[in-house]
Amino acid sequence: MNRPFVSINMISSVDGKITSASGESPYFGSHEDRLRLHALRSTACAILVGANTIRCENPPMHPRDSTKHPWHIVMSRLGQLDPHARIFTEGTPAKRIIVTAHTAVEPGIPMTEHWPLGDDLPLLLKRLYAEGVRHLLVEGGGEINAAFFAQDLVDELYLTLAPTLLGGSHSPTIMGGTGLTLATRIALQLVHAERVENELFCRYRIVHEL
Image 1 (cartoon, one colour):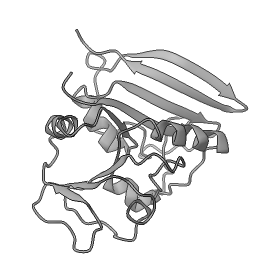
Image 2 (cartoon, rainbow, N blue to C red; image 1 turned 60 degrees about the horizontal axis):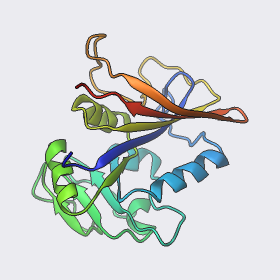
Image 3 (cartoon, rainbow, N blue to C red; image 1 turned 90 degrees about the vertical axis):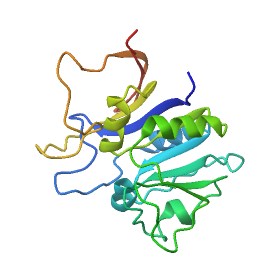
């Protein structure tokens, strides 16, 4: 497999929503979920997130372990990002890479490298692997996750089920896109599940076609 091992980590409501119907993105996980997120980040060579997640949630992307410095990768078709977002101002990643569909990036973005690869995820993974990345952690959003799943590029899914319901027929879920059919649905194997108070922490292995 000449690509990194790809993990996706997400938290959702019990009905699978990652934001509210009005587009709010409150963090509804617990302290335990945050601890597990940071532990997982510490195992990754690089952390990838979509531009819309940066705009809506403005999450910090670095692990709490100050000895770990995974690369930060942002996928943004137009390269229009806020240079003051926390991903650019917090942490000390070995690299900050912006992946776009254009040859230019918004001026002032504090990045290390710009890769104009568009939506070519296999090419992106091939290049990351060539540069030494062996474990890539993807943190959404739903459209980014769907693109990785659609091309059979995900190896495991970490999913925290928060004890809440958000509803909304158009509310984003952990996997967006146009959806799959029963014939093309993705099979998962539950590797581990643990309940901590009212949260459920699940780890799934993706069953790849032979």
